[in-house]
Image 1 (cartoon, helix red, strand yellow):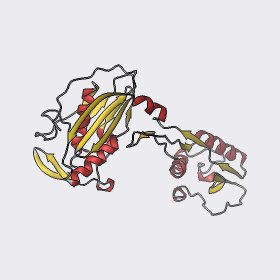
Image 2: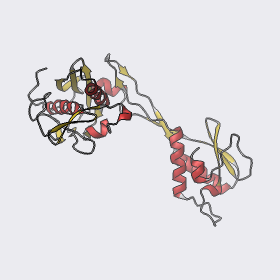
Image 3: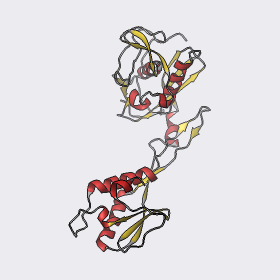
Length: 293
């Protein structure tokens, strides 16, 4: 409905009855009403669409009616939660019908055509991927530090059930996203230029560091990793991976021919990250130093 301010589209609770309008419906319910001049260039009798206005119109319809698909996942009991199919506006079909209206110069109705959007990860793929563990790492933390524990839990949930397909790269910052108070992250100790300080999201470097060691143990290609400016207590020296939204990132690439599944969780004082794949995978594990937990 916001698009009426941008495009001058007439919005009414009931369709208007002028002879040159097109009523847009979704599941038979009136959404909006448009006229030829809403998208056509002025001072011409030809039905030539103003591409910018039309794209804005479709973008706003997408925001209102498209549904994002949801990947299948594995719950805390190890059961597979089925995927959910999404939908989006079939832009080509919509445009073809709109042009037919413009050329006919008559009133009519246009039901918004929708396309099914399938998730990348379905139940069948997950069932196959969890058959072989190829990497694992465990670190410990102090659950009594509530703010730090909160941040570790949030970042752990963000990477859990994530699937990296062959040839794809995984960016910790992109997957976890910006650490903000609105997402539930709290202030906790961080290391800045070798000194301890406090900032939103403190503690998540333990998640990235634990993930790095799980990934390295599976023999995957490390694309980008940075160490802290001073030793951290939860990981052996030189085995950490510091991350910051406006700074360092931890990035790795799936160089194998099978997808990789990340399973991450906290259990008491332990942060546990496992990597799984299909039993068809040919991989080269590495021996890495483990931390006493």
